[in-house]
Length: 377
Figure 1 (cartoon, helix red, strand yellow):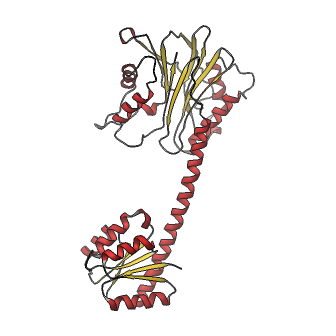
Figure 2 (cartoon, rainbow, N blue to C red):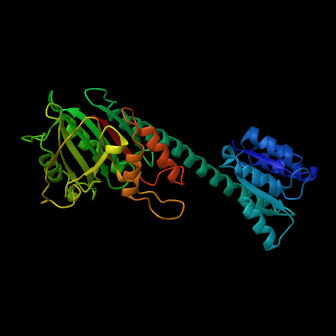
């Protein structure tokens, strides 16, 4: 049974509406002024409110405005009962959030029809809200699952910390690091085009493939070979036009050698030196198109010596492609300067870096997924 709240300071109108609506099978509550009507609305959460425009202690316009501002009453259908018939008055009512109007004197058949129509819309809105809550709960579970796949922090023989902030509940960024053998550590970060579930699924697929090493006859110590194998596996024609960028490296802890390759991904940034005065900043990148765009793409390896102490940052472009308050987009070079200036030797710098990035981003949520790995050697 639908609950209807009648808010009117005229006892005769209250009586007429109450008898008429109860005869139609509705549960009816009554309030004699705007303030008590608003209080009852908050307690009862009625499906529909019929409210007089001209009343003491909050008029109908203000009651409507406050009802519509209350999230708990978001599906309540609001009808203004009024003798005012001008277009300007109707516009005021609509601007306040009114869903419909009933003119005085009340015509019974019109009232019945408008109430039936309002309750249908209320039910549709209520059903949509229910579906939305169910969907949000499922998205939250999926996001938690994705987070559970990401690796935990590593403390030795190198230290690895990470930050992952999807722009929505699910994002296209993904990363992992694992030991290929007792000497070699594989590290990668990828960024799938787009957002949401369609971007997340390819990322999870790559993570599972690389973590389980299911591609046969592949040397996972050779980054260029890994990228070539992924490119053959994830072609646009078979992956719903989804491509991704990736940076993949292998660190040999015996000879302190890092071998890496990238596919359309921002460069990793290696910062070496034991003090700000002799600090060296080196972008690490190789040529190569994103994975999945073209079948015949050549990827190349590069290597560099890792001196101690050094820190390596691997990140997605969402951490620096930020629209600033002046309208310009923050650049990669500016972000690299931030990394160099924020380095605190021997400690994790991620929290400081993230705070600086948030201060540049004028929005509470980032436009793109944001991921960054910090590897201290």
